[in-house]
Image (cartoon, rainbow, N blue to C red; front, side, top):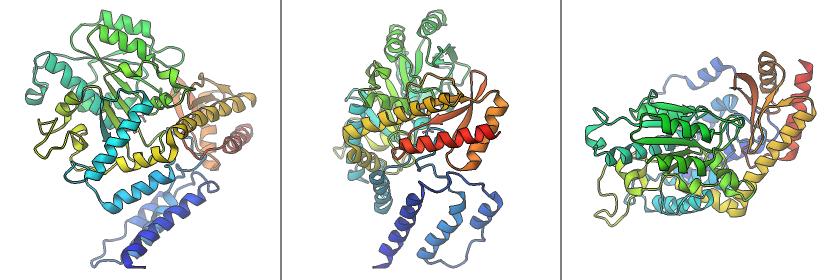
Length: 458
Ligand SMILES: *Cc1c(COP(=O)(O)O)cnc(C)c1O
């Protein structure tokens, strides 16, 4: 084996050994943060080191601080373990060292993005004519979608946002549910709109926007250019807004609808859950993640926009968004906030190819059914499931907030599985998210058994 092959092999072997260890290793272990930092913080060597040694040292240093988020019993946040083909594609993307800025730098990266985008739109119920930016995640996709909204509405109002910025611009209204994801607020801050412009809409018992209250807010507000942020997949309950009603109401007021569907948009990919996002095609921009429910490696998200020209006007730094001098069309960095970029299309293309249409649907259905299994098992054990489990999220109360927090901590320390805690409607709750392709019924049953054992012992 030549030297380069040996180095890449070594990294791949370490990664595969780690993956193989996941089903049985503790999901998280108590971390000695000082030791972990010390392992990385050695003084910088003067002379170069052997790359093979560097790989081994990195593995030794990082090991104690790795969390088995890619494993079958990690149910914290909304985190899925990357699929084998997608992970291998990511390794290739690094090996090829492609810059997905434009088609001149990597025709392959852009062709893969274009093909993957077509499949994504098809699976997610987004019009095939929409533009797609391969971004870092839901946060960046929300920023891109809201930037397009801002661009469109201010252009319509006769304001050149690109040149004049927001100094003296017409005021934009932003209407969003009170249970919107916090990244929406950060996007509004980054875009100079600020959070004071937010008019919040009440949510119903499920955690979805109350469309009657939306109607009230829209008609009672100050008027003017309007953005409505809808949500597919409440990060606590999994609830999806009634997208058809939200879009119709918002459009009747001349508004732009941005859907934050970081994980919930995947409901569209399964016939069993598609009804939850009915009307999704009517929106104007959409944010979705690859690294959550599609099980693509970090980082990967998608910003879709119904108006490719607006999308490119908002984000690209060439005005010639349709056809360039070299004959290429807009793509790559034109639809993202980055310039030089990792070639994210390869991993998404590979994930979709590995799963196929039926495999994506099966992944979504299995996670939802495993979430219901959690809900049924924990209620049967006498604990209170607080949300209506319509997607892959489950909220559980174990008595009062202090007790729930103690049980969540005990579960995290036990290492059988990992779930986080959240506050929803003023209550501290255990939050369970099932998002990975490797989780089985046995993993759920083993996790329920651990939770019940720890809860009863406390
Ligand atoms: C996770 C999430 C985000 C943020 O996505 P990142 O990939 O972490 O940037 C935004 N909105 C919702 C609803 C989410 O669940």
